[in-house]
Length: 380
Image (cartoon, rainbow, N blue to C red; front, side, top):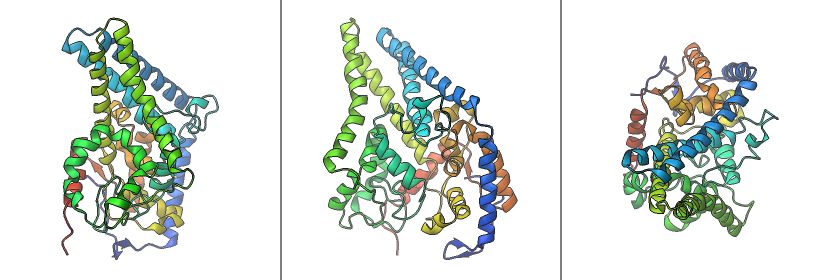
């Protein structure tokens, strides 16, 4: 079960908690105070953290690729895959995802980690990601037909989305096909290709799904954006390094296999981490964006954490603190464990629910149950 703090007993009217503006004003002030209190501490520690993380990532890459080139047995080969996974994972989720939220835009001494300068070491177009993830998902979280991540791809995760026969297969489809290539699939949604597919494949088109704005670029331009971001990874992992191995008398096939395994594990890891912290509550009211206090509550209600230690949190991109990430997306993620203490205290003070799964495994089980439930037509 999801653990909660002081589970509230709110008065509800058509699934909406009845509260007045004075309450929302107070909630806004409380959350803003938490944000400002922790931002006041930002400085050299944050610069050292992100620079140190990049250094560790590069060390892991050297170790991983070196072991894959020189390994003579399954043990050293496995170690090579492990180190390369650490490199790919840290770059994708703890560095890339968080940097693109603008978490390090405050520090002029590290322009390479400013969101609009950053080049992601992942097969995802940065501009498309910012438009879909930052400007839509993080603003209209769990809002019907406004949040692209609520029913991303072909998923059905609530009763309002019209059921299609393809939804019967969404559990095996996502676990067997989507997750092994998760990072390579983000562009399809971010750049509008998935919605174009749904418009043709589903008899109800994009009914129930959020549609991203693609007016900023033609389809040809968007295809180029997709190819550029994906090919920079494919070229490096599946051509350059296997070829270098062959030219130096090593096994190109072994390097290719190791890169593939690290890539696949990384995709699974990130896919299941992201999914484990969403799909937790009823749909949110679109009007929540009209008041910052109301918006804070909608973010609190739309996310769920799961427990883990400090080093595990780094490998999860601190998304096991999804509540804090949605409340304060542009605050450096390594500060979330400390911010969580204040958020929990605030929830206790106002009798609000703070949801936290006891483990990653339990979180995965819970969201899989949601996928399974909505694989089938809603009973009338």
